[in-house]
Amino acid sequence: MRVFVTGATGFIGSAVVHDLLSAGHQVHALVRSDAQASSLAAAGATPVRGTLEDLEVLRRGAAEADGVIHTAFVVDFADFVRGCAIDQRAIATMGEALVGSDRPFVVTSGTPFVAGRVATEQDDPDRANPIIALRAPAEDITLALAARGVRASLVRQPRSVHGTSEQGWRGGLVHLLADLARTRGESAYIDDGAQRWPAVHRLDAARLYRLALERAPAGARLHATAEEGVSLRDIATALGRRLGVPAVSRSREAAAEAFGPLASLVGTDQTASSALTRERLGWQPVGPTLLADLEANLA
Image: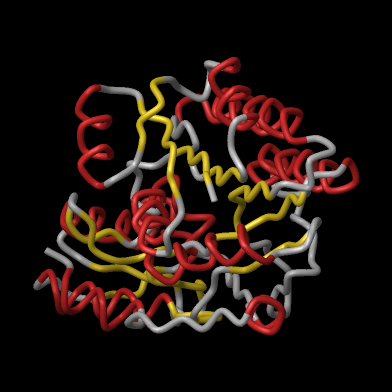
């Protein structure tokens, strides 16, 4: 299958490209620079020069492909609204090129927050959260395409996608906690640290994208969660051991000082199941757990 991939040099996207090539697919990858183009060409992919704002490049890339995987996102916390708008235009543009074709279109989202229980694939985004409300339209656009002859599906990523790439070890939001611990000289958690985050190894996540491309029915919402929830206390303790700093509890009142803009995320218990995803696609994560990976590989 000829697959058009965005975000192909990113932490998750690069693993997706490798998995696709290993499975015998042809990859045409959106790249911004000569260095990225050379790296992907050496790996066996065909570079396509452009950005998420080059809508004609996106349209042509999707139209000429047998399927599309969209992992790119413009990360700019100073202008998150702009990043979401770019993402939504990109999804709509690529999707329009696939209307009526029954070709697969796999789009990236995040696992939802559901108060008081584990979130499932059937749950909608929590639009009461202003940040989630900005990203939720991307899911709406994708699922609407499923009713227009596109085999569109969503792969929802957990808060911690972890693993080692050419750029070293990364752990999603956990990596930001590691940076805070280095800066502050302590690895903090809130109250008893019982808040939990779901997690997955990047190679397991990459395999789910390929399975979604190959098998997911139109309108499927899939969860790339290997672990439903890892407690913040356990994460902070592991970070402290690895970095040689104490793990300490901070009150909710002191959370803003300890975590800055991450305080609301750190203080939220957000778990997510992948039971339906595993049943539907036969996906079985095999990578190391978040804590084992962190303790072995965080530099």
